[in-house]
Image 1 (tube, rainbow, N blue to C red):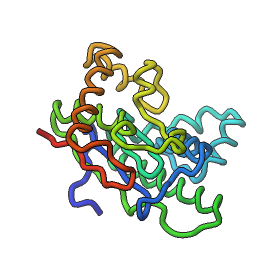
Image 2 (cartoon, one colour):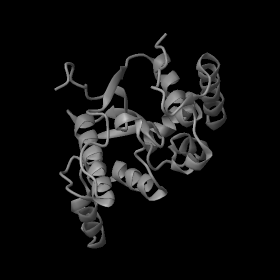
Image 3 (spheres, one colour):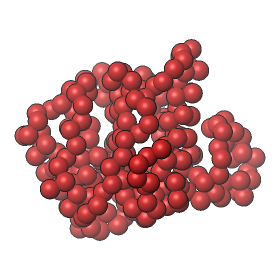
Length: 223
């Protein structure tokens, strides 16, 4: 149990990586499965498997799909061996419930697919409370453009999904539409958003160089 419970209405930087820094996405199908899991497991209702969700959708039962979301996604980046989110908790315990379903569901999928057993990720997810506007803005750039902080091999470049793509196109699917549009307003539109985020990435690169995926992420300072 976490020493400090996550508070409803607050924003959190959530992240985790593969055991021993191993890849968690081996092909495009894996990445797409994880993205589908983000969308479908963000539901207050109990969801045991994505196959059941698909069956329900095919049967067109609207009331079965009307569960309230647990979280809003404000930022994300899925890299070959780790991921980052900025999440707003919408229900008490929402972040923990969402992450438990997401991580357990994806681990089960990959274990079955690859005839493996055991843990895929480095234990429970890590979380940091985002407590002021300046830190929030800094993390918006760091998380949504996290792939540009790293030296990702060309042969693994297709195993990346960054929230920046949805902000650039002002077309939100994984990112919450309401939250995403509010973020763009905060930065004066798409161009302002991109300019600020690119500046954050540039500062981080100057400080650290382009990090290997095998290096631990040193999170941005809050100052």
